[in-house]
Length: 121
Image 1 (cartoon, rainbow, N blue to C red):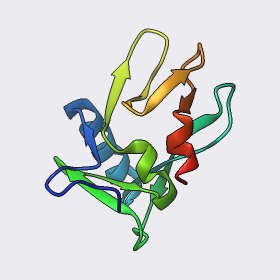
Image 2: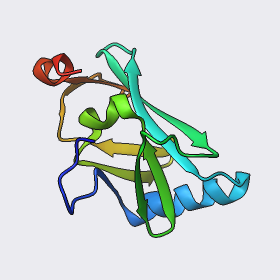
Image 3: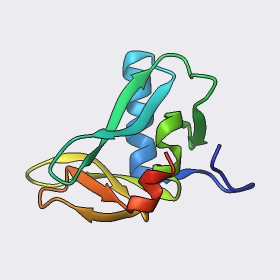
Image 4: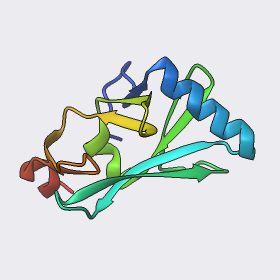
């Protein structure tokens, strides 16, 4: 929908792809749908949900056996994002390196996009 020919909307690090494949296999899911929603102290939050069937309007990205579906309203916000999976002593989880983010809260759970990008919605 908002793509550039020959370029995937998002990319995954090998660790992220491995974790997504693990999640897909453990529940027999077709993949993970990522998106954004209003919330958090910076204004927006990422969402991730299991998907058993892709929506026809989803942008589907497949890499190393991992499948991610991007919800239609989130495509412009997520284009160019790298998804990683990090493990530390205190936590583990997916991290989004998104070039469209202009600010984030201190805990890193919520983000803010450029107002012109949000106005295009």
